[in-house]
Length: 153
Image (cartoon, rainbow, N blue to C red):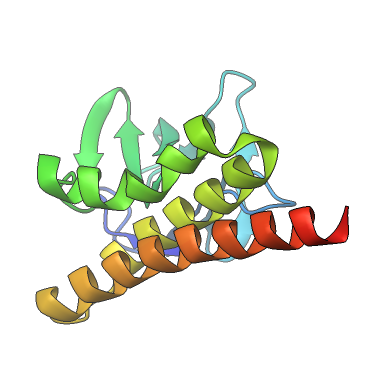
């Protein structure tokens, strides 16, 4: 996912934070060009006035929105999840405890999707219905996989 950044001192530059994907790592684009990593989990970029600034992009699963650190100053792009949102988002992850490897895979995928759904701009009621529906689908998928496993043995 890509997140445009509006930072003080970078008014003439376009900054985009890219969160990691399945086959890619976290990245920072300055005017469309990947920033140079500093070897310490961050990037060194130059402000419009020529001063060097260290930028770190920290992700926290299952929230797809990163937290940005500019010279160790924390910048939130979105407010953190409330406790009840976290509970609802993580509900499919209980399959890890009860479902073995298959349950873990299904639960992790459903939890990741729930995190992404929670950051959409849909109306809140629709978001919560979609997240609840994803949890139900995860448990049903696990149940179907279990039945197929028993039948095919």
